[in-house]
Length: 451
Image (cartoon, rainbow, N blue to C red):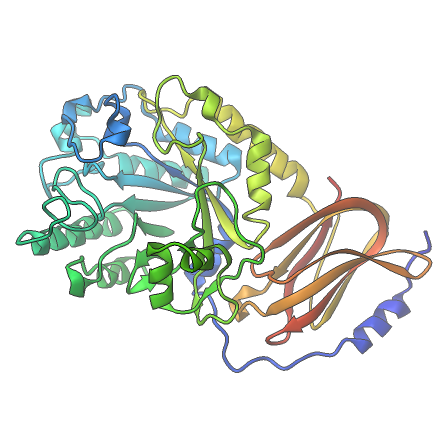
């Protein structure tokens, strides 16, 4: 293969025409940009349903607190599993639909204070946050104001969804739960309200000022007032292609989360013309399809190969991937699950920990020269999303010798990251050409891999 000459690169750069930056484009907050850099996370679902046969499907029953007896519980083991997987952030269900409070709280008499386990003095969320810090993983919190069996709340409203005189009291309770969780444990990377919140004007808790007061660098998910990322619209491990980090506006994001059809499709793909920065989260339980542990279901653990495929269809398509972890009756990640976590993590590191070559640049053309011709089979592209998502169409080519450029792949959206895999080729250089953009393309990384 003939080496590519520097003058060819110079000519390519000379012919590349820059376009002027748009006056305004949607941009992420620093917290959103950090969250997108995490790429891979885990949410640990652990709550009363683990301890009651059939409890995983009876969300309208508040079970006896003394059923909660995870005799070997070790949040350090959870985070060791997350680290093996390669997760950079982790979230814990501090209170799920059952309403059981897994931190020290006097808000109502249904939680760790009411169980005999550890003398009623345990604080699982506090232990979880400490374990995150020890593992070098960013902690986040999940809570539900959407359903609460102890408070008889269903679909955001008291009296099992009928609403009524107790609605205001429950809204204040949601605010106090939020206050305790966001003020006691230090910085949190995300606060996740499952199924969102009602607007305060509709009877929901007014939590945005509380979060802003205590957690200036968190990602908020989600309410009609603020949606700093979006759900992808399925729990099967895939995003749409293309997948944009923007949505039309808050109102459209609200409709998309609540409805189906075209609005649900909006979650899958986003909107390149949108004004709201709301990147996508792809969430999928590690046990197909169980968010909570159940006995004798090790066979449902996704194989590492399936998890790798989900990585390509999420992280490789400008999304975050978050797996659902399921600690068991003893309070540990089961061995079958741990093995899959570790095997998946090893394979992702084998493929992508170290690029064969990498560069950055700006403009319509960015060229990456290899030190010597080499076999490549993957390319990764990243935009500098702190300046917005600008690319709208692109092509990647390989210089394969004798002055020839051969197309490897093409697409529309890039955003935080786009990964393409292709039939292996011997290449001396790779060239990214942006055919369409809203402003000057800013390429944070153009990298190639041989896997």
